[in-house]
Structures are given as structure tokens and as C-alpha cells.
Image (cartoon, rainbow, N blue to C red; front, side, top):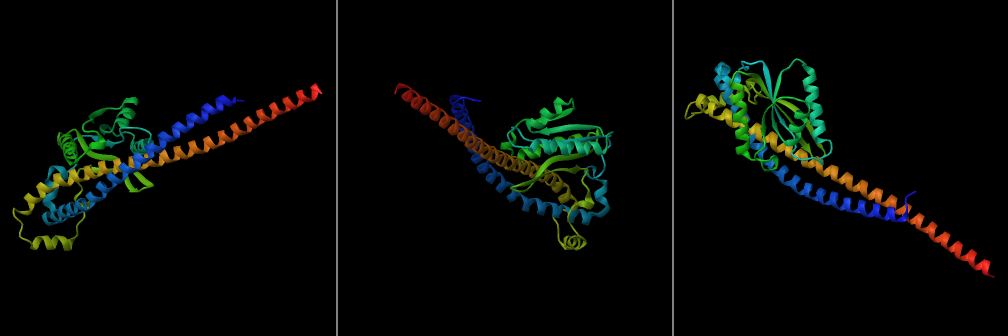
Length: 292
């Protein structure tokens, strides 16, 4: 049985931990709101540029299939852009992402994979298992990522795809759906599937009636890199937002658990202290009776 001094020290230590987790919860909540606003603000642009690329793709028809980014790669391997977190203390965020990756790999065990990694936790996970990391994007840190960083990442992936070493490029990241729901996903980035782009025949007909300057093919070729950059940028933002949402929930649970543990220990401490007081009173009464 722990002594009163030990119980007092444990209550004090848990109280300190509770203050830390509460502060981290507040920081995570503040950053979550900021990154959520950025993620939500970028979605209309992403939808519009995807729709425009889809309409131009329908306008160009079969000519789209001749472009290198719209054809399967010449290689046999798959390039994976894995977006994890730089830091821990975010609950099951990274473990759920790793589980999704392993399930995807299990679907085709013979698949040869090279990894392009954003986030230190993902890099550590892969290196511990002896897997090949073709490139680790360390700068800028994920928390300071911007559109230029996404553009550099896309250039690296496109160069790898066009090198003839890879047949496809996929992104493994966590999609942000709500404050309490964030789902790991595997989506294909390259080759670009023209039939999966948003756009319909009516939109294509409307585009065909417009006067485009320069021509539709030139505009299309210039928009496709922007489309890929936007997809990667949104994936980075959603992964970062999901990380802080998971960290907020994790720190709140830790704070609540510390509070419950502190209350339990206080109850034990008070009972033990009362027992000692009662024992001392009995000793005093017994000594007084003995002196009579």
C-alpha cells in the first residue's frame, strides 16, 4: 500500500501532466481551426480546375490519351507518396495510416514499391522495416507547407513517372471529413485517368462553342500541372488538418483520464489520511484510559 507521501506525490505529478495535456489540447484546437479553414478554402479552386480539365479533356477526345501523363508508365514499379505526421501524440493517426498502407500492399503482394515520404513518422516507420525510401521531403516541415512545396513535390513525382521506372504514382494520406472523422485513403495521381475527371458531354459542348485563346490543347497542357499540384496540396492540407484533429481528441482523452485518475487517488489519499487520524485518536484515548 502506498504511503500518504507517495500518494501526494502521484497526485501532484498527475496534476502536472493534466496541465500539459490541457495546454496541448488548446494549441491543437487553435491550429486545427487554422488548417481547417485553409483546407476548406482550397476546395472550390480544386473543384473548378478539375472540372475545367475534365471539360477540356472531353473536348480533345482521343488526343488526350497520347499525352505521357495520361498513359500508363513504362516501368514495373509503383511510386507511393506517403503523407504522415512529423510529430507524435496524435492518437492512432499514424498507426491507422500505416494499417491502410499495409492492407493496400497486401492486395497485391508482388507489387514493387518505392516511397516518397512527407512526414518524419512515416519515414521512421518505413526505415524500421527496411523499405526503400526514394526521397524524403524534409523541407519545409509539414506544418509550414505551402503551394510551392506541393509544386516541388509534384515535379519530383512527375519526373519519376516519366523516367520510365514506374507504372503509376499513388498518394496514401488521411482525408479530413469532419472534426471527429478522418479516413486514410489511397488515391491514384498518375497516370491521370481522363474518364475519371469531372465533366460531361453538355459541358464539353459548351466549351466547344467558346473561343479559346490559345487553343484548347495548349490550355489543357498548361492546366494539367496545376491540377496535379492542387491535388497534392489538398492532400497535404487535409492530412495536416486530420493530424491536429486527432491530436486534439487524443489530448482531450488524456486530460480526462488524468482528471479521473487524480480524483481516484484523492479518494484513496483522503481515506488513508482519515484512517491514520482515527488510529492516532484511538492511541490517544487508549493512553488516557491507561493513565486513569
